[in-house]
Length: 173
Image (cartoon, rainbow, N blue to C red; front, side, top):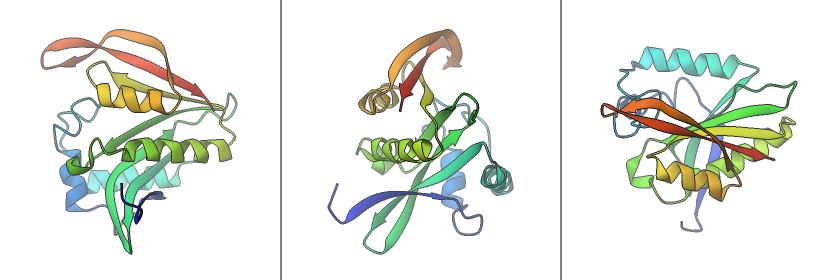
């Protein structure tokens, strides 16, 4: 990553950030092959409704992952903190990079570091995340950010007609 390149997280703007490019990510089977979005067709209106709900929520916090290069801000993916349980000070994280040419370049790791800082400001003490057993990249980025495997949901999901485990990760922050 070049010195002039920076990752920032920001709440999504319904007018400027919900674009045809975003819709294409949400409907790209390769982008979402290991997520619950796999094989679901999304419309711009559905995406806007989802973002509107998250922006109004007190327990779910959705951020766009933006690559800031000089004066440009390029939306490359999303990261979500939530559902926050304020009583137990826990929350889940989920994320994706929609722009495939940014896969494997460390941007997800930076976004996770930033979401951990946001979680700490919200007094959260523990984060959780799940990773499909075939999603080695997601497993590596979670481990790199201090998450540890806490359990396995055996034969939890179907992918290409086969059943696979989901690994449960946790991090005390």
